[in-house]
Length: 296
Image (cartoon, rainbow, N blue to C red; front, top):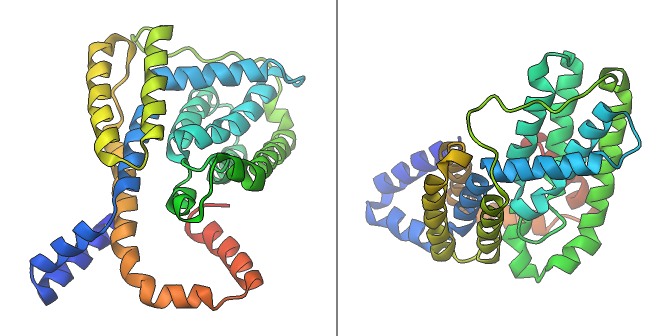
C-alpha cells in the first residue's frame, strides 16, 4: 500500500513540477535499507537456513523439562523471533511461520482461539526479537549509525529485556493452552522430493548471510553477493526450494514506499515530536506502534 501511494505521490509531483523533479528527489534518497531487507529475507527464507533453524529449535527444546509438544512450541516462539537479531525480523518471521505451519497449523489440531493467540504472540515477539543487534530490526537500523549504537549497546540496553519478554509471553500462552499442547508430538516430515541440504551447503548459505550483514550499508556489495547467491542456489537446486524473491521484493517495496512518502513529512512531524515531553513521547509511541505496525 505504501508503495502504491508513493507512485501516486510521484505522479502528482510530475504534474506539478515536471518529470525532472521526482528523478532529482528519488536520487537524493537512500534505499539501502529496503535493498538489504529484500536480500536478507530472500536468503534467510531458503531451505538450508530454515532446516538449520529447525534443528536449533529442536536441540534447545530437548533441553527443556516440559512435555515434548509444549517444549517445541515454546522454543519455536522464543528462539525463532530472537533469530531476528541475526537474520533480520522479516526473515525470522518467515522461518518461524514456516515451522509453525508445518508442525502445528497444518495438522488440524489447533482451536481457532489457539491459532489467533499464536499469531499474536509471533507478531509481538518478532517485533522485539531483533533488538539484540544493531542491524536486524528496521527501526534500529535507521538510527543506529546516527546515534552510535553498536552490538554491545543494543544488547545491554534493549536486547536482554526483549529476550526476557519473549520468554514470559511464550510461557504465558503455552500454559494457557497447555491442554492443546499435551500428547505425542513428532516433527512433520517434509512433503517434498528435495534432498536434505548437506552441511557444506548450509555453511555456504550462512557465509553469504554473514557477508550481507557485514556489508549492510553498502548496497552495491550485497546486491552483488545476492547475484552470486542466486547462482549458487541454481547449481545446488536439488537441495533448494524456489527462492522467495517475490515476497521479499514486496517487503522491500513497502519499505521503499515509506522512505519516499516519509521524507516530505519532516516539516510537520519533526517539530511535533521534538515538542513532546519524554512521557508523552513514550506512551504515544507505544500505543501508535501497537496499532499501526503490529510492533511492541
